[in-house]
Length: 420
Image 1 (cartoon, rainbow, N blue to C red):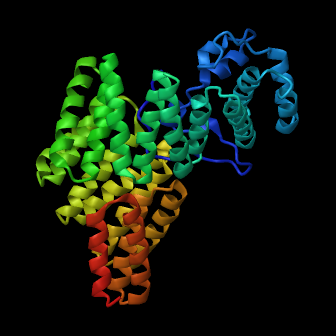
Image 2 (cartoon, rainbow, N blue to C red; image 1 turned 60 degrees about the vertical axis):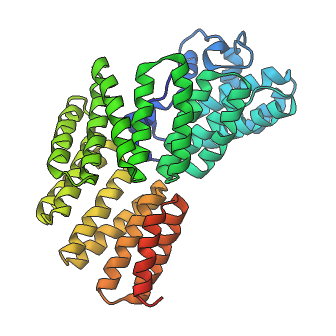
Image 3 (cartoon, one colour; image 1 turned 60 degrees about the horizontal axis):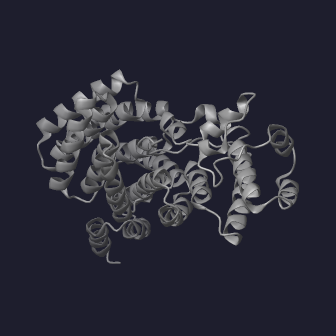
């Protein structure tokens, strides 16, 4: 199984630190790669352990024992698991971790069992890549990208050592997506290129197209326009042959970004509008939000501010409908910037405050850096130089963390103008 391209958004978390799975965005649900394990316990008959990549492909958990363990405190269960052979104890810990995550939505218990399983596997020289990967998935769902990345950076070499190609692909894809959302574009590109090599060996064209799209996005973010165009165009051709409308929409949107970056606004608009139609056909709210957001950037560039505001409000609507806190935050960020350009400072400040809150919540340090820069501009325009300086300094720190040197230097120049 191959994880779908990750949605650049977070998911809603309950106060008890468990997830409201019914409210997860579709792309987040697609990352629940252990669903097969969960379904095995919904039905009367358990599926063999081989279905979820266990160390022992012949392992079949005792259903009654599992149901009993699910009612017990994890600490007590782990004491009982110590009485089993190490390999069997690890298998049960993974079963329980997965069920607590996806059925009970109890993250604390899931992490407890993963930690127990990982510790046991390491002590007994058992395979551990799948445990590290599940810990990464948990961190990813919790928007803790830093922890997710650390687990994946251990899962990738472990998967190679264990010769688990499927898990290696899953780990590299999630690493690419998580580092992208965290703003570490260099690591994202590196992971995607490694993944592309693995996929080329197996000749899976659709998987190749998804990875090429991810590579194109990273190239675009790092201002390598020619490379972005090449990757997106190659991916688009594969999606067309497969009649994959969602893939086509993503590539058309990315090519719109490329043309916009080249200053060809007419071509950019045409690609965004065509992508929007494909997103509508696939009921992709987030994709529609992206297209309206990008159309707004063109209107802003052309100083058509009223049209930009209209598009950004629509983008915010679609992002909210898709459940994307980060998407809504980005729309509010640019809405605040347009209001700033119109010198409607009160409205700008309100939007930027919302954007900062949502982007902090989503842990998107790249977009947070942009928001802080915009707030710095706003404060400077109001002759509040001291406050502006503080926001610029915070923006510089975030840009530095993403490795975007040009953006970092741009804000440093703004800071210098303040006499800092």
